[in-house]
Amino acid sequence: LSAKQVAERGGETEFANSYAAYEAFSDGEKQRFSTLRVVHSLEASQSRVNPDPSAEELARWRSRPTHEHPLVWTHRSGRKSLVLG
Image (cartoon, rainbow, N blue to C red; front, side, top):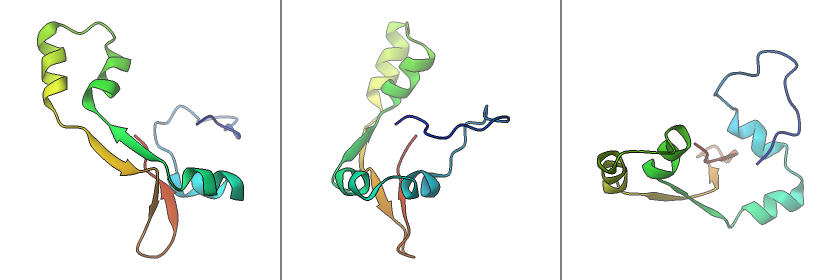
């Protein structure tokens, strides 16, 4: 994903409104993304912060299970959002 609208100021936050992100997609994008699944892993997230881990760190990261989720999540209210992070 990449930003289509960027805040003029205050954009350094690490928080995002995943409902607004989903709602900003075109109908075609919503359809295309509705079947995608995402995999969350400690190794993938930590390697971006520490690209050269020690063998012990790497083993610890890899010991944690990965989790798979649908990219588009539906709240019990019916409102859709993205599973990111």
